[in-house]
Length: 385
Image 1 (tube, helix red, strand yellow):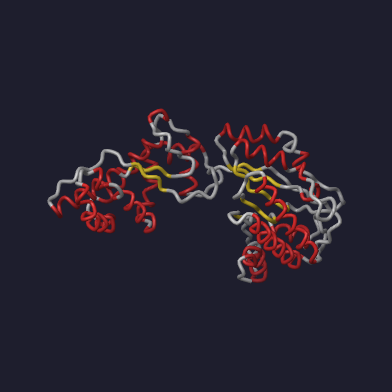
Image 2 (spheres, helix red, strand yellow):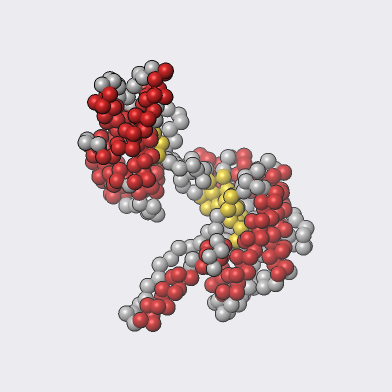
């Protein structure tokens, strides 16, 4: 059986976006063929998916069906027309169901029988031969040209990859000062800073090719504009050696002690630090890294600016802090792109749902306002506010 984890991850990610799936549900709806067909059947009714499905079914049909090369271009309009009408053809529901059954057998086949390019960790693999056969029959009936349906036609229904694997690891790298003044360093206390080579080697063994990790700004820049990369280079080099794509956090709640987060100098210093980090990565041979400039802006603005749980330890200034962190993130992105134009960026936020504890209109309104506040950082970054 092809890696069970891969099959489950792909299907659950595409169809459910679930975090945890009970084993009994997985067995009934993914491992069992009938359950798999019932679960995935609605994909065949999605217009965008239908277009890709039709294109996959028709693509290469001319070559596999034995159309002479000289007539291939002449046949292309007929093939395109058949692709557009595929989902409305008599027999489409049955052909789609048979496609799913063949795809299930393909997904759970013995790995030794599969071509090496079949990587189920990031794409949904379909055998669209039944659909290609439906197209071939339609064209044959309309033109009297006998088209031979392919016995197997494998298609990967996936978008271009943003991340190197469906499953992503994460190493806690918080480095804030708590309300009592104590500096946290989770990379050190978890042991990741010491055992980073082994940590990334283990990820590679498990087939996990993407992780979140971070730079500890307070250790790197102990003096303004002087950077000591000794705490970061072992992480960078270990990830590179194991082929792990990392989403690098540049500021995970912590910053140098001499900085006043409320002043413009914070934004300016952070931008220079981010640019210096990008320049170092380029020097190390990494030309297209992925960054999370400021981690969880909305949460930090609440925890550090509204209720004083950790630095900067303010109360009632959450919105002000949120605006400052957004400025810092945008400035860092600009600085990074100056050295690494192909860099990519993610803005990570915790996703929560808030409802009122009563049916009072005031409580409902406040709960909804609290729920919507979690999206403000994204709106500010996108220029919507």
